[in-house]
Amino acid sequence: MSANSQQVRKRDMTFASRTQTRIWQEIPSEENPYLAGQCRCHGYDILELAQKRSFADVLFLLFQGELPSPEQAKMLETLLIALINPGPRHPATRAAMNAAVSKTHIQHLLPIGLAVMGGAHLGGAEVLASMRFLDANLARQPVEVAAECLVAPQPAEGDFHPVPGFGSRFGGVDPLPGQTAALLVSLSASGRALAWGQGFAEALAPHGMGWLTSGVAAAALHDLGFSPWAGGGLFQLACAPGILAHGLELADKPITAMPFLDEEHYVIAAEARK
Image 1 (cartoon, rainbow, N blue to C red):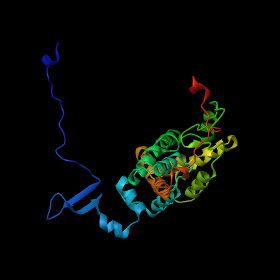
Image 2: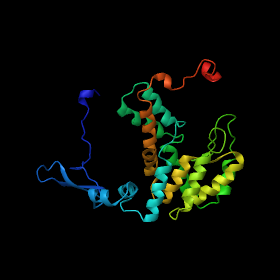
Image 3: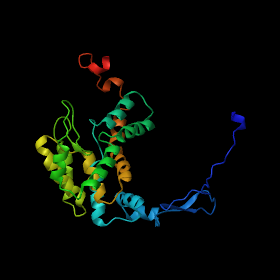
Image 4: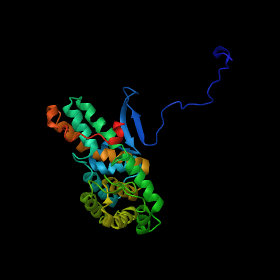
């Protein structure tokens, strides 16, 4: 059958007549109905929120549909501060720094870094997977789950993440995520996920592994009631200020301001040479 003789069929779909959202309401301006004269987030006037509430409060409201309790707001604020800068060792930060010395447009530095921060290695995808892992195992004993995870052979070189959000970093236990987790556990809004993660990290410690920042974020966001999908994106959002700050710091520097491997340290894996 030729292309011209084929029967043309319409898609059996009915599209929405206008954009719909339960999150945001825009009251049209009297002068121009295409402009908003007032905006409400889940029913709360945004300017009133700006005067009376913190950023953490409104962020919680935006995703959860209700304002947090004082205890929830304290924990979210603590988490946002703890995550504000992933540091120059993180691949996402280094991506922004490398882009900066390469004279990338300033407005592109953050998107470049966040693209890397969305990944499965210490990024948003790992937070999402870690939240799902916690969901699936909270009813079990963390020591039992750790024993099962440690059966898998560890790589001869490099770090090992037996499950998302937990493992080794630079060959050992990363101390700062453990300290952050201990701080969050001490707050009244902490719940089952953080407590379970503490037990799991303790079971991994004798094997040179423990909490990763992605796991701490996953457990805290789980206890605050966020979905795994939201958790992955909120992790990127929380880390964004540090990524941008490091990028801007190098924006007017020459390309030599960042390290470059010399021939002595530039090694091509044997399997890649074939």
